[in-house]
Picture 1 (cartoon, rainbow, N blue to C red):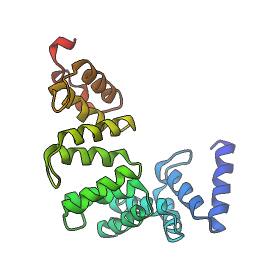
Picture 2 (tube, rainbow, N blue to C red):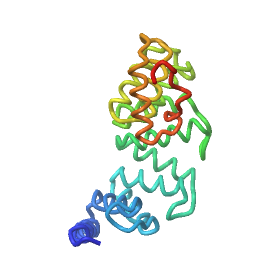
Picture 3 (cartoon, helix red, strand yellow):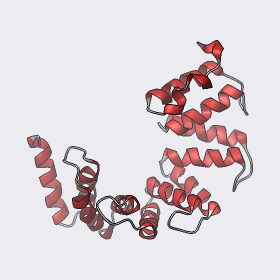
Length: 214
């Protein structure tokens, strides 16, 4: 481990031990994801717990993720949902997003698309662009909200501008079809190429591109 990384980890550990919850969350995230430190979810879980119990919503998000995935701790979906709720209440957009997905799917909680819709909206507002994508899909389909393609386009535009590839691919499909927007195949192609480069395999399929673009 590079000396500066080891020193930063040691300082974070000292701050965490001194009761600074954000330091516990930061160190836990590094261990959970293997970012700069060897990946160790089992060691991250108690640090996430300390952070969450100390009032740091990012700690609740991390602990919820670990329990949802059964990574570093036994899988516990109802508890994960509770933790995502705490993160969401702390204005961590990802917490709202993850809880919304669980409610939409009935995963560990009773399915409730209406509540999920509200949480997707809050996730979008609190900075998680994935929430904008999911909310856009709901407006596109008319599920749980009034069917509104113009609103869907605006949400996909917002999500794409914030780096959510799902928003870019949804926007590309609407531009390709001229669905609620003027048809713009060159821009659609550019968006699909962007999402393909970002790792979205469906966007890499030439079959979804019009032959005139090649």
